[in-house]
Image (cartoon, rainbow, N blue to C red; front, top):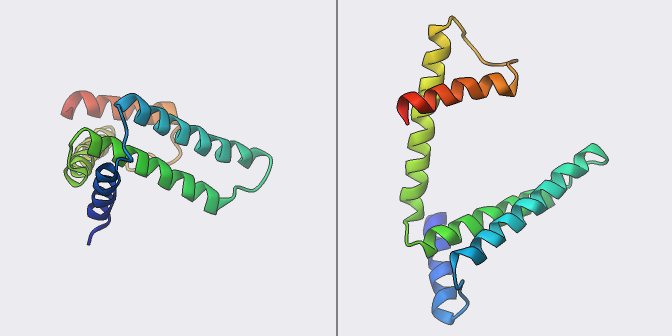
Length: 127
């Protein structure tokens, strides 16, 4: 069984047992809570070594919360992720094309703001 299939089965099992979300606001609050926990782990990196295992666990919790939202909204997680990856691939290919048209072979070393200019142009061009 694939991982996303197992996750959907677990979500449906929890729902059938009565352990369920009442509304999307609850799920969004959980997503925000997981993001805050991740942020706390990352903020520690300036003062101490990141606990990678704990950080990975929190990122996993975020994945699960987002998957819960997907299932709650009755979207197929596999299809949803595929659509997101397809969109990212289109935009990345566009970023590469834009850079190459400007004689740029790599964006390594460019500041984040400069990278976002390429990204936003790609978004305008390919959606």
